[in-house]
Image 1 (cartoon, rainbow, N blue to C red):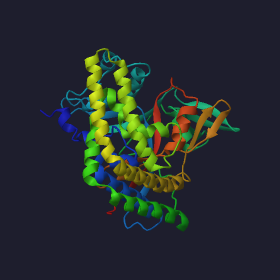
Image 2 (image 1 turned 135 degrees about the vertical axis):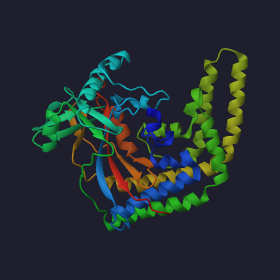
Image 3 (image 1 turned 180 degrees about the vertical axis):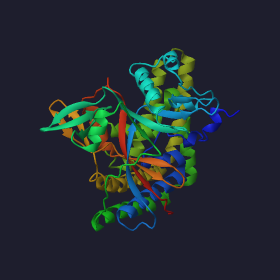
Length: 399
């Protein structure tokens, strides 16, 4: 008999669980990740400059929460809905309201999955589809923004607004539930072409990223990533990503790669020192102190290489932002944040570039703007979580 676990063929790397920023791919996969970052941005530049040799298209993806699965369990032929626990060794599938109650879902999740089970079972789904749950009854508000009425929903930081008189607005208002199936829903939002000057700026940073990439010692990079992978548990805060994000959270850019690289060692030391302060016995304290000294001794060998890596990341970010700023000129839905003084217009959270051959995807996010919004906006934590990214599909180009 066929088991559901065999019906889902994706491995962990193929599941749509987490997306990384494109500039961090060098920290995720070393040399191959750095090369892939250049490939991605180069392909985007070529597409927007109108010189792509491959078929490309731009689509909008509504990225809600939680991820939801629906389909027929081949084991018994019964229809189900499920969370990401569908990927468990023993998948957890909801085939009845009783099974949803038995799982003791918190808050509104219980009612949402019951609505999903009732409504999706009417669609004639025969395969297993993954999508993002957008809303159910009661999640959509009518809001007046600068004298115009919108249907709005606020998942976290950004308030998304749809004109009440639009076709999409009427559909959202009348729907019992909203879902976007990843493989079936596409809403063409428009097109954009970079000017020659805009293309030149992106090309310049790609060229400088390439030149810096050649200076990175691949052997040392592998050793550095091994150290990074050792930062787990109480020491996860010692990672370079966390160090970099400490500036992103403040809305600060890395303007001096060499200084930033030199500041990484004190950052790591502070993480280890905080752990030492929490320990009770001298033996344990000494153990962590020795580990810190060993790590710091190794990291000092990587300062020059790390400076080149950070410089590389900066150029990838600048090239990326040339693409993001152009894409921000084309959007079919209003995006705002709620402030003490009303609503403020902002750009979308970001975009996702998808390699249509390998299926790999990375985030293209203006981390400075979104991070600032994330920490200053008035948030609706009690509302249903969802987020929205624009998805950009394109054919892979070689370096």
